[in-house]
Amino acid sequence: MIFNLIYRSLRQHLLATLVTAGSIALASGLLLTVWVVKTQSQAVFAATNSGFDAVLGARGSKLQLVLNAIFHLEASPGNLTAADFEMIRHQREVKTAIPLALGDNYQGWRIAGTTEALFTDVEYMPGHRYQVGRGERFFQIGKLEAVVGSYAAKKLGWRVGTTFHPSHGLIFNPQAEHHEETYTVVGVLAPTNTPVDRVIWIPLEGVQTMKGHNPLAATELSAVLLQLRAPEAGMMLNLRLNSSGGRLTFAYPIGTIVAELFNKIAWFDQVLTLVAWLVAVVASGSVLVSIYNSMSARARDIAILRALGARRRTVFGAVVGEAAVIGLLGATAGFAVFAGLAGSVAALIQAQTGVVLEPLQWNPVFCWGPAVFVGLCILGGCVPAFKAYRVSVAETIAPVS
Amino acid sequence: MPLLEVKNLIKTYAAPGGQRPDASAVHRVVEVAAFTLEAGEQRALRGESGSGKTTFLHLLAGILAPDSGSILLAGKEITKLSEAGRDRQRAESMGYIFQTFNLLQGHTALENVELGMAFGHGVDRAQAVALLQRVGLGDKLGHYPRQLSTGQQQRVAVARALANRPKLVLADEPTGNLDRRNAREALQLIREVCRESGAALLLVSHDERVLAQFEQMQDFMMINRALATPPTVFPR
Ligand SMILES: Nc1ncnc2c1ncn2[C@@H]1O[C@H](COP(=O)(O)OP(=O)(O)O)[C@@H](O)[C@H]1O
Ligand SMILES: [Mg+2]
Image 1 (tube, chains in turn yellow, green):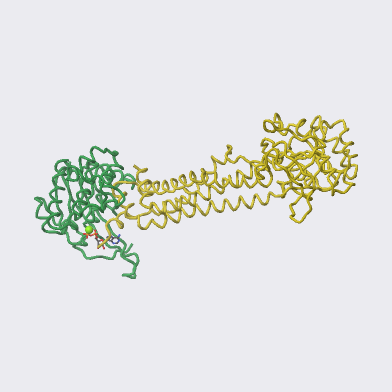
Image 2 (cartoon, chains in turn orange, blue; image 1 turned 180 degrees about the horizontal axis):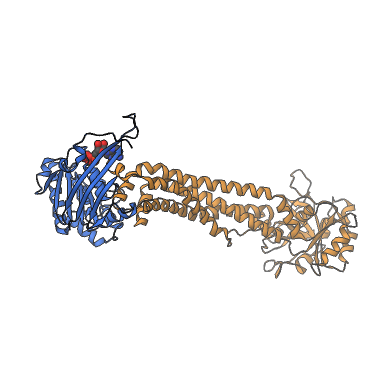
């Protein structure tokens, strides 16, 4: 019966019910999004290493090196020589060394020069190798060929056979000269959900031998991506390379360096989370206000129920229940808001970094988030419920004439 | 044993502060030395407006607590019960009919009747439907109060008052808001359904036409001694 009372009351104040449930839905969707994006991006970014344990680059910030070489963001901190590559390649701790040369773009899409070994020798995730479509292949060293990451290919509309002229620089500048050479796409990589998807890959010698490059740079690399024989071996290399005070930076372990980035921007997370909580509190406040405002009009109904034998705590419970149902409706609808909002944020993050979040993957916030909202609404509902509790039956039901 | 036995019942209100400088002044509204009602009996009380009839019924229903005195309903002392106990007593064994019907506007006729059962022994839909059929509204179960005439609304209220199979029905000027024909019919209906269900009926009114229908009629003036003495100031 109490459920019917709640249902009737919600229906009687349908507009207020929808508006307040809607505000809860928005608040809940926002909180879920902030929380999921925050936790997932930390986990996913820290796990993004394209299958490498470490990066070697010119003297500079380790974070910049990782962002440049692994995430394909930011500028290169400087160049390495071919001798550096030879040196690191022959360290006994090093299993695989992949050279990387950056410095060109096509309409803002990064062009990276590397060797075929990247595709043939490296698992970008345990158990996952790079693949191209049927009848496609990886580029051949010495040829003007390219393999395109899936996201870049999709956005550029490129297929096997597409030709293009690279432009100088990492950032697209319409005025910049472009290279005379015409490259032909020979393969489109299957999606890896990593930054690799946003890159156009060409043979290393290509970048190095293209006209217009400083001839000195012919032997220069931006970074070397490294797989180690044993993860612990990185500590030894780290000591040897970083403490030598030389021209080199050894970024290891990659995950820890990315985690440091998240620590640096933790305040941003905290501000976002705080805003989400504030919105949550305001939305629950709207439930309080909306029910409270209808309380004077409902005093008579409450007095009638009391006269029929309803106890004070029953009418109190009915009002609290009403708030709880609004909270439940709102929190449920909040999942739709969350799906839309988190989907857009994930798309944005993929466009900017190539890293793919899966916001719909199970997250404990899916449980405690709605519970918190229902709880806040119940708390808010207690205020008007107390008013209902205190209604004087005799004075309300038969006003003194 | 009478169904209802009232002894030395006193109810006072604090006099409105604005009227007297002495804020502790109290206004005695009900002072009933003795009043009894037998099971199944039907009785009317005549009283002018302001004579404390409504207050008296509220006391009997347990909506108000008296200052002192005793109310025995079927031998059970109501005034000793907690408020929740009195609510339960009312839900289980009393029906109340108001001058202004007091139907819940957001609920249908059937749901209003079901609400009359909800807080007592529980909802029995078949019984609620049967009651509405009994008061001639079998075809209006799903109607909301605003879709019913005043006469029909009062009939829903009558069905609701009897929904919990009460031992005692209290009616406070139940025909005051009805025209003459509807008033006569409503009164007849109230008396019939109370008789059929074996409930005692205590009706208060100032309307002579209503009062004339009852074989058992008492002047509330004679029962309520608070009316004999003019409002007094009691030092607390
Ligand atoms: N809540 C109250 N506070 C103060 N005085 C009240 C209150 N309720 C009723 N009274 C007074 O008690 C008297 C009796 O009222 P009531 O029982 O409603 O009479 P009736 O039903 O016979 O018209 C009136 O004088 C009224 O002003
Ligand atoms: Mg009255």
